[in-house]
Amino acid sequence: MAAGRLSFSNITALAPMVRVGTLPMRLLALDYGADVVYCEELIDIKMAQCQRVVNEVLETVDFVAPDDRVMFRTCEREKGNVVFQMGTADPDRALAVARLVEKDVAAVDVNMGCPKEYSTKGGMGAALLSDPDKIEAILRTLVTGVSIPVTCKIRILPSLEETISLVRRIKKTGVAAVAVHGRFKEERPRHPVHCDYIQAVAQAVSIPVIANGGSLDHVKTNADIEEFRKATGASSVMLARAAMWNASVFRSQGALPLEKVMEDYLKYAIRYDNNAFNTKYCLCQMLRDKVESPLGKQVQAAQTSAEISEAYGLQEFYRQTQEQLQARRDALQSGSQPERPVTDGDVTTMAVKFERREYPPQITPKMFLLEWSRKEKLEQPQYETVQRAQDRAFQSTVTVAQKKYRSSLWEKSKKFAEQAAAIVCLRVLGVPEGRIGEEDSGLVCKRKREGKVNGAAEEERSRKRHISDVLQETSEVAVVTNGDSHKEAPSQRESL
Image 1 (tube, rainbow, N blue to C red):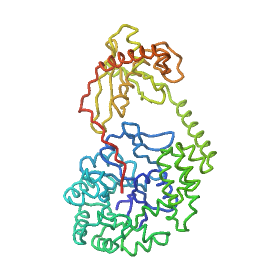
Image 2 (image 1 turned 120 degrees about the horizontal axis):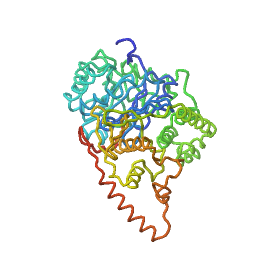
Image 3 (image 1 turned 45 degrees about the horizontal axis):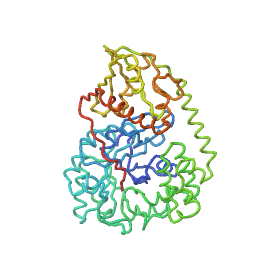
């Protein structure tokens, strides 16, 4: 392997796990001694719609879906150790996603072992095991198309001969390693792992083989990791449930008390603004049979990160972290120079992004621009939106009074792109845009700004006005070129 590339020989790894392998758990595993950490399986269709965003407040790189959900978050601490695992059944789409993330991860992995229906029905996961030609096409496309190592994770096939034959084909694609979950597709964690199959595979190929599936029967302590490695003859070991239950299993000095592990995990979750329900899920997995204890019940009842912090006595840590993050936001905002308009042909541009949180729920810049145009007796704004093929990002141009305005920045959705264009127009014209804290301009009535309605008669009048507004809004011109907008596929964040 070239210098600086991730090696899969003689390593211990955190396995990809549904809802568990998010940034806090990966960082925790690295702290405790894991050499490599895998993210949870992320589906290519969803990832292909994401926009790469540098989060200067959290000091992370976020891959954000059109619905604003962070699908994958990473940071500099894990850059040389994190493997991005994807669910895919299409070589071209797999390559597009790999290229999207390759500057921020150490390797990419294809899940070929998940036996769950949500994965297999799309031809992904364990369904790929019955289509070796497609496996070969996906892996060859990735190996030749990205600059970082490519690996895959499989389950064993019904016979040892079939398993070895498949792994030999996989090896010829140029992958850096193959992880083998030593169970058949129909088997579940309660079934014993087939160490003999993993051993035979390890003897059959020269690339590193990573043994997986030993948490229940073989690995309960750090010392057991080496025993599992010897029992399988594998180069490396990958742990899922043993690490999920207590990530300090990676510590060569011995495991830590679960209370300490949960506290360490929660601090990372707070520091990196992890989704509260994901944090709660991981903590409940650690609690296991203690999930009905007083602490477990308090965690289950929590709805926010603040409430989870209270359950563990980390209120002060939570408060201090929030203050630090807010101070960073304020510093970034005060240090930024005001955007100035630039003429680009017949279009006036500014580097502006639409931040939904900066506006009240009922208010948008488009609404203000529409009301201003009515007041000035102008034709209503017309929006023309284009979509960039490589990352599906959007850019919109708005025409008002025969003049065109747009943001030079691309947005993750058509709606956000139109809002950004409206902001540029309003700022160039010196017209209020409705941001929180902005002095009331009178462009949008107080009822709309506050979202309040008094009395049945007024409620009915409001309903009629709303219908009229909607009809007028929907009559705005919005032309999408360079490909049609695609409906989002349902989120598939589950993995094996």
